[in-house]
Length: 300
Image 1 (tube, rainbow, N blue to C red):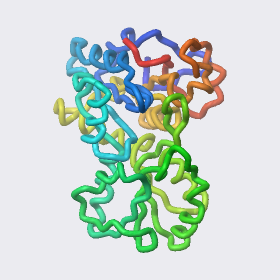
Image 2 (cartoon, helix red, strand yellow; image 1 turned 135 degrees about the vertical axis):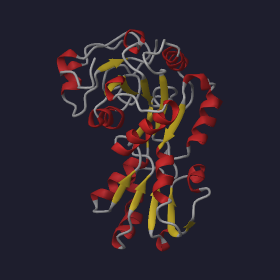
Image 3 (tube, helix red, strand yellow; image 1 turned 30 degrees about the horizontal axis):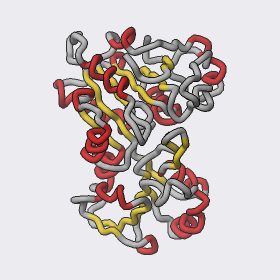
């Protein structure tokens, strides 16, 4: 398997990652949708990552870096993973869109920033030289998601966005995901709000997948671990979202593995646990981004 996307009619559907693992030195693994669904952990996924890390090295150790579009620093994601019982042995490092957002904000010391998002995402601002202000006083808006993702949509923010646009206030989107899957339901994320702002002419910068800087940062982390980054041909991204995980991997020139039982489950015909993943070539043929392989869940 190479970093080039396979033709639509030739997408492998492996039963597990065991037959693929030897071909890679680094997995860039998504979190929500692969390791957990927001309510419970997928134990076989973390087991697969542990088994991969234990494979005999081929010139360099096998590494796993969790790459998440979570709008919070990596330590906050680790606490969530600990709460789900996901062992730290399953990964070497965590990189989040929250980490990238903090790096971008640090370039503008003293700036007046408005946080558009739930209070639980406030740690993204801790320790930074900035002033959190009301929307009408903001020089920049940092969007981490809807205030209430159980009932709100982008439509609820129409008037607020129009006011920002009238003042040409730029938005920094700290989570490019449009939706995530929680207990079988699709929950809106910051990316959905940012897209609505961009549609009315608002300036938006995105931190996270599928944009190149997050992959460059992930390889920098790998280089910190082992002295040099791995060859791109030895890197694979694993995730459940075509728009972020797979498109990002395609654009960066690395292989990708799509986890079917995630946000695309219903489209791919595996919404129920008893459903079996069938021929997905026709569905993938209609998509702009294509993975190198598709797996029901990440298992060994």
